[in-house]
Image (tube, rainbow, N blue to C red; front, side, top):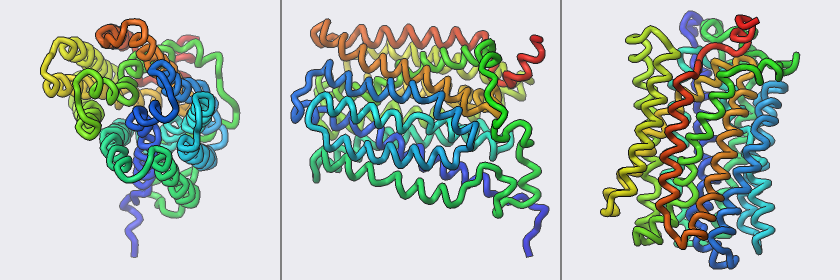
Length: 427
């Protein structure tokens, strides 16, 4: 006989689904950076043109973030996630079928549209299924998984490329998401109170439906646009994404062309910033409760962690540019990834707290800014290399400066108070 006074743990299966999808998403996203050299040779692309291939994904991803998040708030993540995962899985495979630059740009654009809305809808699902006290830890685990998936993907792709062409590799990676989509749709429910695996004790732990229920009454766009915390969340995330996208786009090329590393060795070291970034997520989430106890404030504790992350990443980038030894330089760049991901748990938990019933829309807006910044980063690097005759130094100085702008945003950011409460107080 089951003890109904002991909470079931169905909410942790939601976290597990989110982790597996995040891993699949990053494998599908990052694999192109490792295949880029072979693709450039076969398709006859310049570095600037490859920069466009990296960039169009980011622009499409960014532009469809808010619609994807809004749709999840409106009809629930269950139907939205199933559809977008199948969509992007198809266009992952289709990347292996391209024959020239226009076909590559079109395929990566459609791939970006598919991936847009993934993290806003995962955030929406976690906001619905998790107590507030468990949100930061869940986001840390989620982003740890994405970073380690991204870190291992270069090695995985390099290994796969020893057996098959880059075209077949994309087909292999594109086949994974469909299985996840079917399993998720069969098990998940948008309202945890209706799920047969959730007992009364676990239901009592979850946030009330008034805070997380599907927003059938629409989105208060005017209030959102007048809320400073929403704008600051967006701008700081753009600053974070600008530097981070270098790791998943141009870093393998940099390690081969500048540091003289082989394909396999470069693949190993290209994963270091993401590997240490995953560690940074867990360290950040571990420091959060301790700082909350010391300061008595969720707002202040998140602010301290995020500023530490931004400033630490900026300093590491500068030190990296002045380090001649290749292995030492890559390790320092890995530390930049470590500090970069200090910001992830407070930022994404912030979208859950600030957004409430509209967490999908708020996280979608934040991720849209990140996507725009990342797409710009991939494109800017390509053109800087073209204009400066392969001088990478300016690329790193720009990233370091933008990290400091992100730190400045957090001096004024309240990443905890729901925007609807902020608006009612102001009124």
